[in-house]
Image 1 (cartoon, rainbow, N blue to C red):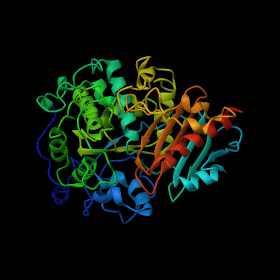
Image 2 (image 1 turned 120 degrees about the horizontal axis):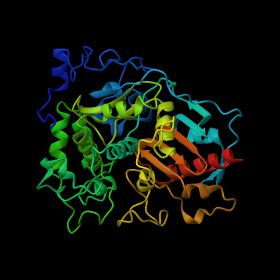
Image 3 (image 1 turned 60 degrees about the vertical axis):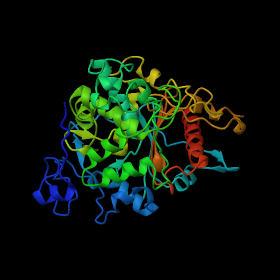
Image 4 (image 1 turned 90 degrees about the vertical axis):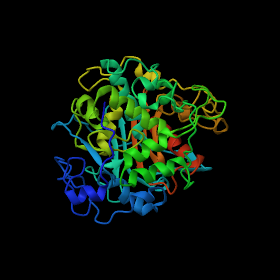
Length: 438
C-alpha cells in the first residue's frame, strides 16, 4: 500500500528546504539541482505565470508555462541512461507539403503559423525528415504534454500486463484501489476506465471556471494536491441511468485513476516505472519530469509528462513498432497496440467523422468530415493513423502503414477551440505522409 497521509504544502516544504524528499530553491520553484537532473533544460525563464491560472494564460504566458511546467509543480524525474538511441537524418530534404483548409491551399510555413507551433518533428522510417523549434524552444526544452500523457500511461499499463503486474484489463479497478469501493467507481473495470466509459459524471469543460476539470487544476496548484484531488474524484456521482461501458465521455479523473492502478499494481510511481521499463531501455536522450501530486508516491496520470521533442518521438516510434525497442526486444503484448486502437462504440464515441468510434485505450481516432472528400487519395491516411492529443494543440500522430510519426507542440489560443484546428492537424499530417510516400 502507498502512503495516503497529507503532504506538507509547497511553502512549508520550501521553508524546510525539502520538496518530496528533494531540496527546493528559496522561492519554492524546482531547479535542475533540486530535482537531481543530469542536464538542465533550456531555456529557463525567470518569470513564471501563476500555475492555478493555467487555463486562462494568454498565448505568450503559455509558451513560458508549458516549457517550465517541470519547475512549477511537484515532480518526479525519470532519468535517461546516458547514450541515446540515435535518430538519424533522412538523406533528402523534407518534400513540399500542401493541404487545403477553409477553402485555401496552405504549406508547412502556414501550418506552423496557424497552429502556433513551438516544436514540430516529422519522422519517416525512423529518420528525421523535418525538425523545427519556435518561440525560443530548443532541442533541450522539456515541454509539457497535457493529455498526451494519457497515451503514455496506456502504454505503461500494457507493459505492466505483459510482465504480470496487472492481471487483465477486465479487472475491476477496486482490485487495485479498494478505497474506491462504495463510490461511483465501484464496478468499473480497467478497460472501461481506459476507454472513458466508466459512467461516472465529470465536467471536462475547459472554458467553465466551475467545471470539475477547473477544480482539478486548482487542486494541483494548491498546497495539498493529492488529498484535494482524491476528495474531488471520490465524491463524483454516477451518471443517472448509465451503467459502466454504455456511454463514452472524456474524463481526466478516470485517467488519473488509470495511473493510480498502474502505481498500485507496480508499487512505484509512473515516473519510476517509465524510467526503468522504457526510458533507460530505449534509451532516451535526456531526463524528463512527471508532474507529481506527492513526489515519490503519487504522479498525475491524466497529464504531466515533460520531455524533449526528440524523446516524445522516440516514445512514438516505440509504439509505431508495436511495442518493440530499437533492438527488437518486445515489451508490449503482441496485440496491445491493435487493442488500444480498437475504438469503443459506446454511445458518444461514434460520430459521422468517426463511424467506428473515436477512442480506444487512451488513444484517439481523428477522422475528417465526409463532405471534404478525397479526390487524390491524400486523406486516406487519416483512416489508418492514431493520435495522442492534449489541449492547446499537443499531439503525437502515428501512421503504422507508411511508418510516419509526427510530434507537435503548440500554444493554441484556446484549450479546445473547435473543429477547425483539430481538422487542420489531421489534414496536415495526411498531406505530410502523402509527401513522404513519394
